[in-house]
Length: 382
Image: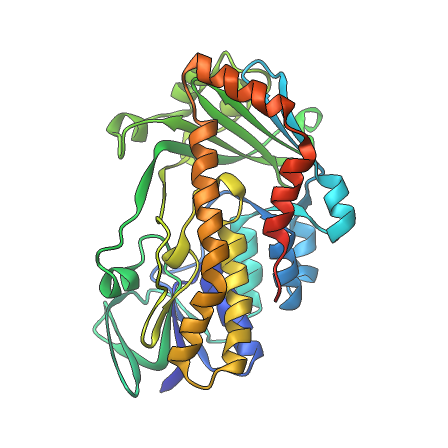
């Protein structure tokens, strides 16, 4: 059977795109390499642009009970002294929902429930693709193949499809590595509306409230790429690294189990100038993976899905539509990748003098400047 679109990858980008295309009447098949959707991953922070996109798809009603609304963000030094603060509550009043958090697994589950039955297939790893004037053929690891009018690569920063089409494009390492976990905390320690990020010479520690007294935390440390020492870190190692940071940083690490730790180096894609190769289109992290410093990875994937469905309404030729999609999306995604990269370099400083200079500048910076930068990301014309 020939499909209108084959989608490689059943993550947030792939699932959201499938929903958006199905709402426009397209026949879509999502091919996910893993054998099932598991309760894995950590928390996500998403902005007003993501909420607006999910609302257009009719998903927010089912998602509301799984989300936590953020009312303020605080950036602290390692002693807990305030560096800067943003009043997200003011933005919530303006946008309805300006910034919210959700467990990645919960978001994926809700998205999957909004697909037509039989859309998502597991254990379907694409190993090669061919295309001609009639369409695209995806060859799978099990020896079978599937055909479609076009293929959308939503298979992440390590995209197999991108490696086939654009083998010269490779991820770049940010210079810091990261541990993440979700943990339930005592009721008195849970601040549901407050996101905090602590910047110190030994690394950065973020505390992100979810629901049900759970928090998502992350710890970013400067390190060599693919360090064996870092990969072997346990919660005890992280405790000793961050033990002189303010409360409740070390307590949160102690409440976490080694088996809950997710470790990976922070990488992105240096902005590229092309998202498509004839009838193959890259979206989400496959096209414009960003470091997580602006909380916009998933948000930009959701924007991709909505905007692609809109572009397809106005273009009869798929290849022209894919080029138009790039023209619409490249400026914003490029800006986010570049700004997020620079933010990462600034907040990962480990020299005491440079840290003091950075903190002094941040303390003098009016919070409304940061809010305006955030709002510029939220503004999306769907």
